[in-house]
Length: 117
Image (cartoon, rainbow, N blue to C red; front, side):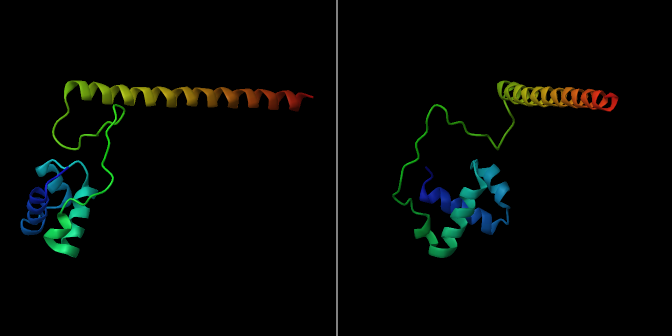
């Protein structure tokens, strides 16, 4: 959870320095542009008081929750995981393409049998 002072610093950097939302997120290591966008909107509507941490449902993180890094270079492990995910998806696509080609061949063979009868 971010402090009010941190939120104010980021929002002021966004306004004063003319940075884009994505540049601010990279600079201040904020994971989501929508988070920063909501801070800017709250600041415009209510000023500094809008940035105060409001009580609400606390965010829970489970072991299954993973965060996608949107800043900085990837580690070797992250690069391998990304490549592995890509190769798995590519493999699934090739399997489906092969199954579709076989199905078309079977339908073409059945069409020839019908023409002969």
